[in-house]
Image 1 (cartoon, rainbow, N blue to C red):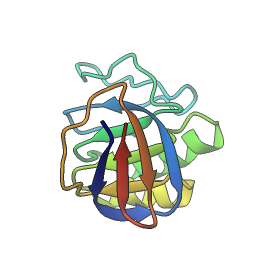
Image 2 (image 1 turned 30 degrees about the vertical axis):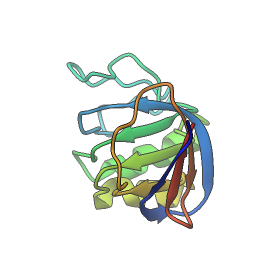
Image 3 (image 1 turned 180 degrees about the vertical axis):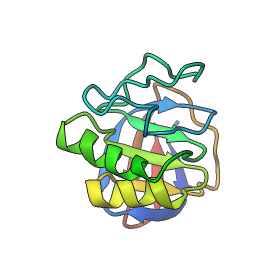
Image 4 (image 1 turned 60 degrees about the vertical axis):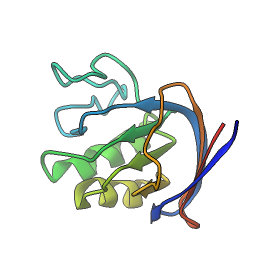
Amino acid sequence: MTRHIQCRPIAKGIAEGSALVSQEPVTFFGGVDPETGTVIEKNHPLNGQSISGRVLVFPTGKGSTVGSYVLYRLARNGKAPKGMVCQDAEPIVAVGAIISGIPMVDRPEDYEFETGQWIHIDGEKGSITVE
C-alpha cells in the first residue's frame, strides 16, 4: 500500500531509498563517522549502522554546530544519506542538508516510518511517498 504524506520542505531535491529509522535524535559531530557514514555514538540505537545511501528518518538533530560541516563532509566523501526526514528539523541539520545538497523535509503529518520501507522525498513540494 502506497502512502502519500504532506510535510514541510527544508532542502530542495528529490531522493528515494530504503529508510533507516531512529526514534532517538541524531548528532552528527562525534556521532557519525564522516569517512564511512557509520553511526558511532555509543548507546545510540543506530550504533554500528551506516546512514550512507539511505533515507535517514529521525526526530531531530542534537549537538554542536559542527554537525552541519559533518553532513557536508559526508556528502563530499560519498557517504551521506540520500535524503532525510525529521519530525522537527533544527537549524544545524537543516543548514547541513542545504549546503550538502541532501533533500530534506520535516513535520510529516504522519510520523510512523519503519526501517526498510522505500521512501521517496520531494524537498521542493514538501511530500513523502512510502511504498
